[in-house]
Image (tube, rainbow, N blue to C red; front, side, top):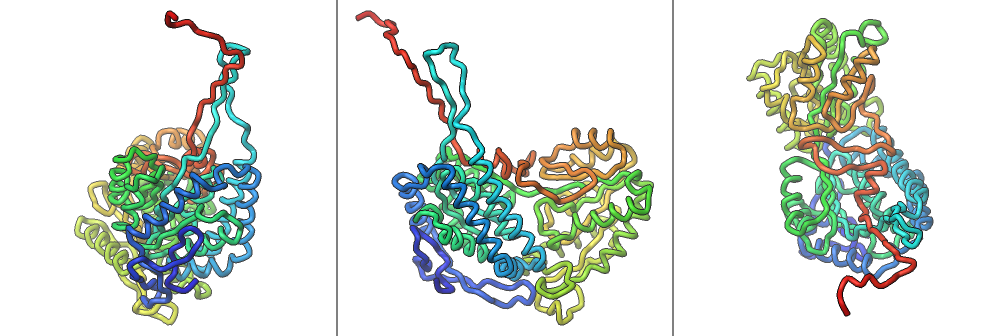
Length: 500
């Protein structure tokens, strides 16, 4: 495969039908380091046709579950083999640290193994009691068909795996469009699927922009399911396009996630240090470019000043730089546009009365962070309120806003006062309060005295405008299946409804 042949259709690597290409930029220095094919609607049509033929005429949908599971495990093993190479590629492509890239590869391998175990551990179907020994009634699950997958730029490999692993476990074929900004590790994953022995046409990838490739994947009549992870505006367009064909849709559209800290969690030095450390992790890992980022610190008023002062002091010490450099804790933003967007949010917050405790600017350049890179200092904005744009909208940058509360009811009201509902956390030593908060907070995932861990066995998704559908867990597999009721009469007899 040449550097520009990043479109994979019916088992063959090719360039774009138009001949167009795109340079991939390293956000640490704004220099191009790879070239990909810039596909379009024609390429999407070819990929969908290949996936359709592989599903309707190929062997994969009827492949025994044990064989499908074995292939998923081989893919996991190949990921472990190539961990260093793929982790480095993810670091350069998305700007994250090398260690984050390695952890992403580990998580992807875990996801493939989880869905292999899940699908092979299932029974033959759910028996339905028809009230007669002469009737055998069972509900079975079958692959849904051709799946379109559209993934975001922040966790390209991880988000691809959350869709590809369950889709393959269920027996589907697919076409995936990674973000045109960070496509390289998804291309690498398709290569590993082929190496693992996946039949021709089952896995297809088209690299290209959303307004052409993504739009075609959403509205094509031969697509049975569209799975999209990204922003609310684009997700709404995908849902509208898919609705015309009454396609099944799964959407994960981001969040504005509260991290609620009660004073009792900070009563000891260890508790205080842990809550501060996790607040930093919640807001600034991968420069805040995480759909579940805890960018809203909601803290009890009695400990606000001490907590925010220490938070700002430690945020100033976060080491920014190229993700491949030793000791770097936070990399650049993914693009020039994303940094400018972040700067706009901070400017609007200051104009609306927020108090800057640290950050709020581009850092001084060093050898580890060239002046041309898209770096931005971890930023803490104190004295924020719910009317501020920075508090209500998803920033996707290293920006933490601070709000305060006095009562548990007020904490719940602030946590739930968002159009999103993806994830949130609560910090308290009161187990009763923790359970009450978890019950009352309207978010798809609630962490208690922790932030950011996810389990392959647990469903991931949100409430409100964070999307519809679930990824991971049994529900993640169910997204890629249709239920079929098979009713067998073992002793058929005439019913004589009509004269004759």
